[in-house]
Length: 273
Ligand SMILES: [Zn+2]
Ligand SMILES: [Zn+2]
Image 1: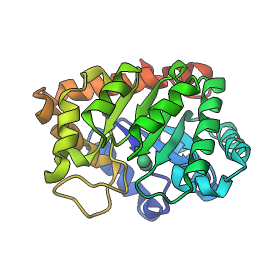
Image 2: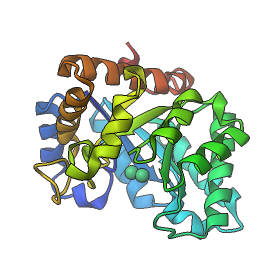
Image 3: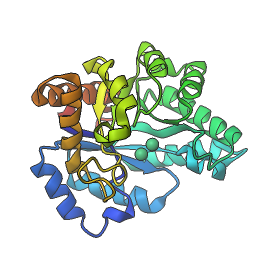
Image 4: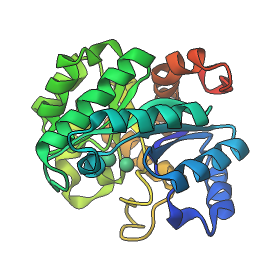
């Protein structure tokens, strides 16, 4: 089972990372994608150390839309930060999370768009898949991605919370959807409706830890072990066996990251076998 999106290099895990990794292993989590802020030296260092000790760990680096304001009018510097991170992290197999967040609006919209656009171009040039963060901006993110020829690289719209209609456009464009603990929330019906219509070969499971702990852990720090709860909830919604969901989501993750693994001989390709 793969946790396709977690912030394991966040400082909130630094003190008890041994136990966090042990619990993940005990829960059957064989791999995870650690999302790293390309602008944070501390996160990059922790991610490198984590990847060295957990062979199943992959890394994705990017500038989040919340941080885009730091690079307003200088999107090239965001790209340079991501490129530096890709060079120092052999386990890096994707660019993200990148995208647009019109809900929190922490960065000016123009800066978000410029920084996202520049990183999509980088992903195309490097032939790397993208991890997309879109909040109240699913159509806008997809439009920008397609304008930039992002259809040439694979990608995941992580923690999908948008409409059924936007999901249909995203799936038609060839991308996959990541589902979190929101699937277990009473108010997650819109997300369950989207999930029920998503083909199993486009479904990823993720924790987005330390955020979004699934019920009954809601409100506490989330961690990769709890992706097992997400997978169980996904299996319930889809009316499938848990084993089938685990197998499919693991294969989906391997397929999406395979190009990057082939590109980078330093990365063990165990996930793609
Ligand atoms: Zn996100
Ligand atoms: Zn995230």
